[in-house]
Amino acid sequence: MADEFLQLYEDCYDDIYRYVYCKTGNPWDTDDIVSDVFLKAFRHFDPNRRTHKAWLVTIARNTTVDYYRKSGRELPGEAPEGVTFLTVLEDLEHDLERTCLKSALSQLDTERLELISLRFFCGLKFKEMAAVLGTKQANVKTKFYRTLEQLRKKVEACLASERS
Image 1 (cartoon, rainbow, N blue to C red):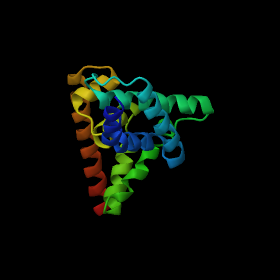
Image 2: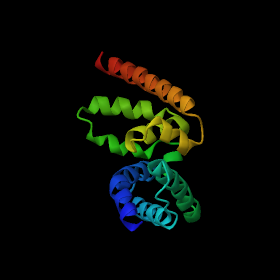
Image 3: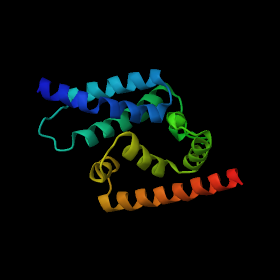
Image 4: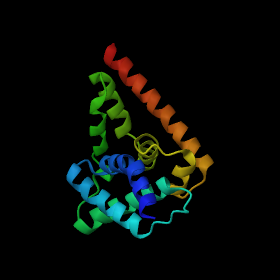
Protein backbone atom coordinates (compact mmCIF):
# COMPACT_ATOMS: atom_id res chain seq x y z
CA MET A 1 0.00 0.00 0.00
CA ALA A 2 2.81 2.43 0.85
CA ASP A 3 4.38 2.03 -2.60
CA GLU A 4 1.05 2.65 -4.30
CA PHE A 5 0.44 5.76 -2.23
CA LEU A 6 3.95 7.02 -2.93
CA GLN A 7 3.29 6.63 -6.65
CA LEU A 8 0.00 8.53 -6.29
CA TYR A 9 1.82 11.27 -4.39
CA GLU A 10 4.47 11.58 -7.10
CA ASP A 11 1.87 11.55 -9.89
CA CYS A 12 -0.50 14.09 -8.35
CA TYR A 13 1.54 16.38 -6.10
CA ASP A 14 2.17 19.11 -8.68
CA ASP A 15 -1.48 19.23 -9.78
CA ILE A 16 -2.76 19.38 -6.20
CA TYR A 17 -0.19 22.04 -5.31
CA ARG A 18 -1.19 24.18 -8.32
CA TYR A 19 -4.87 23.78 -7.52
CA VAL A 20 -4.45 24.83 -3.89
CA TYR A 21 -2.09 27.66 -4.84
CA CYS A 22 -4.70 28.98 -7.26
CA LYS A 23 -7.15 29.05 -4.37
CA THR A 24 -4.88 30.62 -1.75
CA GLY A 25 -2.53 32.81 -3.74
CA ASN A 26 0.32 32.29 -1.29
CA PRO A 27 2.91 29.53 -0.95
CA TRP A 28 2.86 29.32 2.87
CA ASP A 29 -0.81 28.46 3.18
CA THR A 30 -0.48 26.24 0.13
CA ASP A 31 2.31 24.21 1.75
CA ASP A 32 0.26 23.71 4.92
CA ILE A 33 -2.88 22.73 3.06
CA VAL A 34 -1.16 20.36 0.64
CA SER A 35 0.52 18.61 3.57
CA ASP A 36 -2.88 18.16 5.22
CA VAL A 37 -4.38 16.89 1.96
CA PHE A 38 -1.82 14.13 1.55
CA LEU A 39 -1.95 13.22 5.25
CA LYS A 40 -5.73 12.79 5.02
CA ALA A 41 -5.36 10.89 1.77
CA PHE A 42 -2.81 8.54 3.30
CA ARG A 43 -5.08 7.81 6.26
CA HIS A 44 -7.97 6.89 3.98
CA PHE A 45 -6.08 5.50 1.01
CA ASP A 46 -7.74 2.65 -0.86
CA PRO A 47 -5.61 1.27 -3.70
CA ASN A 48 -8.77 -0.07 -5.37
CA ARG A 49 -10.34 3.38 -5.73
CA ARG A 50 -10.94 4.14 -9.41
CA THR A 51 -10.52 7.91 -9.47
CA HIS A 52 -7.63 8.82 -7.20
CA LYS A 53 -7.00 12.23 -8.74
CA ALA A 54 -10.62 13.38 -8.44
CA TRP A 55 -10.66 12.07 -4.87
CA LEU A 56 -7.50 14.05 -4.03
CA VAL A 57 -8.90 17.23 -5.58
CA THR A 58 -12.07 16.80 -3.51
CA ILE A 59 -9.94 16.49 -0.38
CA ALA A 60 -7.94 19.55 -1.47
CA ARG A 61 -11.12 21.58 -2.04
CA ASN A 62 -12.57 20.70 1.34
CA THR A 63 -9.29 21.08 3.20
CA THR A 64 -8.73 24.54 1.71
CA VAL A 65 -12.17 25.72 2.79
CA ASP A 66 -11.70 24.20 6.28
CA TYR A 67 -8.26 25.79 6.65
CA TYR A 68 -9.65 29.26 6.05
CA ARG A 69 -12.73 28.70 8.20
CA LYS A 70 -10.60 27.56 11.14
CA SER A 71 -8.22 30.49 10.79
CA GLY A 72 -11.11 32.97 10.58
CA ARG A 73 -9.83 34.39 7.30
CA GLU A 74 -11.66 34.69 4.01
CA LEU A 75 -10.66 32.29 1.25
CA PRO A 76 -8.87 34.58 -1.24
CA GLY A 77 -10.31 32.85 -4.32
CA GLU A 78 -13.79 33.75 -3.13
CA ALA A 79 -13.09 37.34 -2.22
CA PRO A 80 -15.42 39.77 -3.95
CA GLU A 81 -12.63 42.04 -5.12
CA GLY A 82 -11.07 39.53 -7.45
CA VAL A 83 -9.35 36.27 -8.02
CA THR A 84 -5.95 35.67 -6.47
CA PHE A 85 -4.98 32.73 -8.67
CA LEU A 86 -4.49 35.18 -11.51
CA THR A 87 -0.92 35.57 -10.29
CA VAL A 88 -0.31 32.21 -11.99
CA LEU A 89 -0.87 33.95 -15.32
CA GLU A 90 2.26 36.05 -14.94
CA ASP A 91 4.03 33.60 -17.23
CA LEU A 92 2.08 34.69 -20.30
CA GLU A 93 4.40 36.30 -22.82
CA HIS A 94 2.50 39.43 -23.72
CA ASP A 95 1.33 41.95 -21.15
CA LEU A 96 -1.77 42.86 -23.15
CA GLU A 97 -2.88 39.22 -23.45
CA ARG A 98 -2.27 38.67 -19.75
CA THR A 99 -4.18 41.81 -18.82
CA CYS A 100 -7.15 40.87 -21.00
CA LEU A 101 -7.24 37.30 -19.72
CA LYS A 102 -7.03 38.45 -16.10
CA SER A 103 -9.87 40.85 -16.73
CA ALA A 104 -12.02 38.17 -18.36
CA LEU A 105 -11.31 35.64 -15.59
CA SER A 106 -12.05 38.15 -12.84
CA GLN A 107 -15.56 38.53 -14.28
CA LEU A 108 -16.36 34.81 -13.89
CA ASP A 109 -18.42 33.57 -10.98
CA THR A 110 -16.82 31.10 -8.56
CA GLU A 111 -18.49 28.08 -10.18
CA ARG A 112 -17.08 28.84 -13.63
CA LEU A 113 -13.70 29.74 -12.16
CA GLU A 114 -13.65 26.36 -10.44
CA LEU A 115 -14.24 24.66 -13.81
CA ILE A 116 -11.24 26.47 -15.27
CA SER A 117 -9.09 25.55 -12.26
CA LEU A 118 -10.03 21.90 -12.31
CA ARG A 119 -9.44 21.53 -16.03
CA PHE A 120 -6.33 23.64 -16.58
CA PHE A 121 -4.53 23.67 -13.24
CA CYS A 122 -5.38 20.13 -12.10
CA GLY A 123 -5.61 18.57 -15.52
CA LEU A 124 -8.79 16.69 -14.66
CA LYS A 125 -10.90 14.99 -17.29
CA PHE A 126 -14.59 15.86 -17.48
CA LYS A 127 -15.56 12.64 -15.71
CA GLU A 128 -13.20 13.48 -12.83
CA MET A 129 -14.44 17.07 -12.71
CA ALA A 130 -18.01 15.79 -12.43
CA ALA A 131 -17.00 13.52 -9.53
CA VAL A 132 -15.34 16.43 -7.70
CA LEU A 133 -18.28 18.75 -8.27
CA GLY A 134 -20.94 16.14 -7.60
CA THR A 135 -22.76 16.66 -10.87
CA LYS A 136 -23.21 14.96 -14.23
CA GLN A 137 -20.40 14.86 -16.76
CA ALA A 138 -22.62 16.33 -19.48
CA ASN A 139 -23.39 19.35 -17.28
CA VAL A 140 -19.73 19.93 -16.55
CA LYS A 141 -18.77 19.66 -20.21
CA THR A 142 -21.51 22.05 -21.33
CA LYS A 143 -20.70 24.66 -18.66
CA PHE A 144 -16.99 24.36 -19.34
CA TYR A 145 -17.29 24.95 -23.08
CA ARG A 146 -19.72 27.81 -22.54
CA THR A 147 -17.26 29.33 -20.10
CA LEU A 148 -14.41 29.00 -22.60
CA GLU A 149 -16.51 30.67 -25.28
CA GLN A 150 -17.42 33.46 -22.87
CA LEU A 151 -13.73 33.96 -22.02
CA ARG A 152 -12.72 33.92 -25.69
CA LYS A 153 -15.23 36.65 -26.57
CA LYS A 154 -14.19 38.82 -23.62
CA VAL A 155 -10.48 38.47 -24.39
CA GLU A 156 -11.01 39.21 -28.09
CA ALA A 157 -13.09 42.28 -27.26
CA CYS A 158 -10.47 43.49 -24.81
CA LEU A 159 -7.62 42.96 -27.28
CA ALA A 160 -9.56 44.73 -30.05
CA SER A 161 -10.36 47.74 -27.85
CA GLU A 162 -6.78 48.02 -26.57
CA ARG A 163 -5.23 47.81 -30.02
CA SER A 164 -7.47 50.45 -31.58
